[in-house]
Image (cartoon, rainbow, N blue to C red; front, side, top):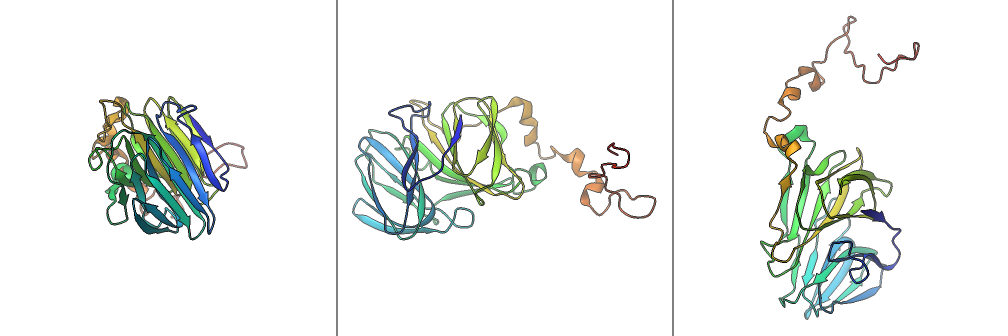
Length: 294
C-alpha cells in the first residue's frame, strides 16, 4: 500500500493505529514547523521516535534540552530521539523544520536515548562495485534489537543514490515495515516493488510493506532518502531478518555480472569501431529515413 500527501503546518498523520494501523501496529506522521513554532508530544502509553529530516530545532525531554540541526537529509547527518511511554517531548523550531514521527505501544520503561551523528550506525552497502555499482547506498540504523532491545520498534534511514537500487536483492521478513520517502527535488520519483505490486514513489510518500519480497530504486538524477521503520512481532523481533527471494539469490555471488563486466566495449574506450574509424554507438540510432530501428 502506498499513499502520499501535501504536507501542511502542524502534524500530518499518515497512519493512525487507533483508527487503522494497516497491519503496521504503529502510528506514523510528519510534523512541519515554522520558525518560532513549538509542538508538544504527549506519548501516553506509546513509545515515540522523532527523526529530524531538515531544519533546526531544540528538543526537550526528560529534563534535557538539545539543539539539533540538519539542513537536509542528503548531505547532513541525522538526529533521532527514542523515548518511552509517558515522556513529554517539546520541539521548538529555530527555522522551518520537518520531522518524521513513529510510535507504538510499549509497556517497558527505559531512559530516553538521543542518537546523534556521532553515534548512528552507518553501512555503505554495495560500495565495492557489486552488480556494477547498481545497488550502492548508505544505510543508517538509529536503533534496532541489538542496541535497543527495550523498544518494540526499529528505525533507520537509507540514502538511495540517483539511478541506484536499495532493499536489494529482493527480500522479505515477517515483521511489518513502513517506508517514508524524501527526494532532493520535489519532482523526484522512483519505483517500489512490494506486496506483489509496483508503485511510483514520490516526495513525502509513504509505503506499507505487509508481505512479499520488496525492493526499490530511484530515477537517474534524483537522490532518494527514506526512513524505514519496523515493528517487532511478539516473540519474533526483527534481528536484521532477511529472507532472500530464491529466484534472485544468485545476485549475491561476487561475479554475478562477470559475464557483462568482461565485455570490453562497456569501458567506453574499446567499443567496436565503424568502418570510418570512429566509435559506433547505435543506442539512439532510430533509422529515421526508413522508419525502423537499426
